[in-house]
Amino acid sequence: MILMATKIPKIPLRPQVPAAKPNDNGNESVVLERLPQKTKPPQMYQVVLLNDDYTPMEFVVVVIQEFFNKDRETATQIMLKIHLDGRGICGVFTKDVAATKVDQVTEASRKNGHPLQCVCEPIE
Ligand code: TYC
Image 1 (cartoon, rainbow, N blue to C red):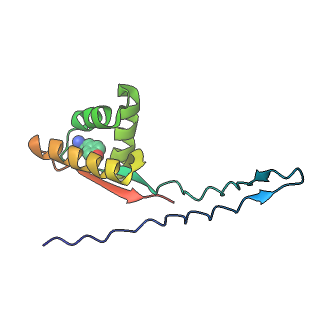
Image 2: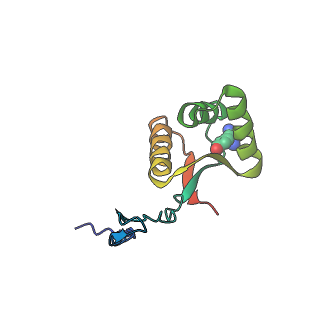
Image 3: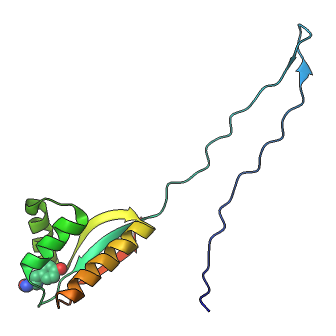
């Protein structure tokens, strides 16, 4: 059995509808107060490629173009940065999208016989 820990979202309680009160003219009216917005932006994740000694540079450039929608020039710069520094950020996404990118890149790499490592990490 697979157990998953899920975060239960905090749903703001519905404010009580204020009772209608007669105003100075004898008409009934209600004042509706706008609730302050409480939604936070989602946690974002950066998808990182790691350097290795075996994956061809051309393959990495194509991966960055195809999966991270970069033009050839940008993809080449990112690949060279990874080659020189050991790692490089290819994009920033919500959790599910980042995890999908990791899976897609890893699958394409293994299918082509390359050991390219792709990981995602929360930012901020
Ligand atoms: N270091 C590899 C080579 O010299 C190229 C490479 C770049 C591999 C980036 C992985 O994420 C990577 N062929």
